[in-house]
Image (cartoon, rainbow, N blue to C red; front, side, top):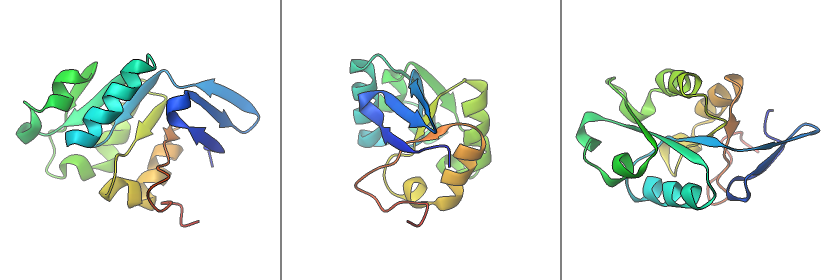
Length: 131
């Protein structure tokens, strides 16, 4: 797995025998959780890329994020392929899934890591890797 250990807001990630600083993160959720992640990233000088649906176009997380990308698909926040494509297009280092749906989805985790991105584990949620 790409991710050996992670302390997201400590900024450093250990990948195999290599240490990498997270400079740009995609936030794959909306609402208050996304706002909290964005605010923490800004304090740590991490560039934020958020995704949003038409219904969320005037949401606070869209206004606060450094970059906001419209998810113009029927699946919205559950469109794994589109989210990974956005990660590639915006050259993010890591993906924070938020809480719930995506953070509990092992296929999302695998797709993010297969794309070469760091999957930000949430210690308050079960591991999507099943361990």
